[in-house]
Length: 180
Image (cartoon, rainbow, N blue to C red; front, side, top):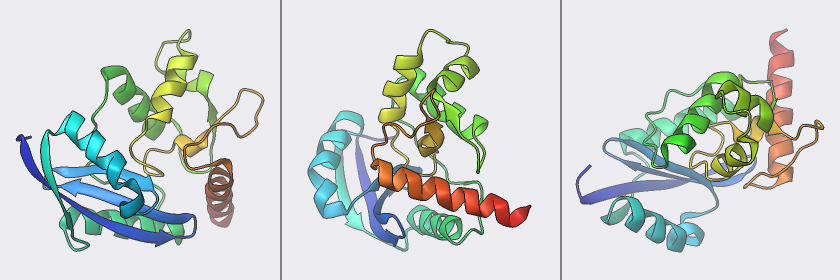
């Protein structure tokens, strides 16, 4: 990616609150809870770290922003189980492996523990590191860190808040019951 890039965004109203989507012409950069205006300072810092110089443009019709809105809308109306968005992952190799494991090893309607993810990565001693990588997940809902629970089966830590996590798991539980 070049040092100068345009970042397109839109804010989507969902059953679990506002979600901001950031994209470039190469794919999706981030999907975060909250409104763009409230996240702008965080985005400025994040963008400087990863992309150097960028400008923001509100663009709900940008192809990747539009695709994200469509796929998330289908998810919330129980018409979509998996996402096909092109994700641009900026993180350490370990973080990227954790985010990939979340997408590949926790299907809709299921949950896994932090230890399960560490074992899937063949890094059984890295449960804390897995938790740290999950905490840095830049793709709310699409990379399903809300499906990770504590080893005791309880809902623990979620950047979007435990209420949101509970809502998402209930939505997904209802969706899988409807198919049975």
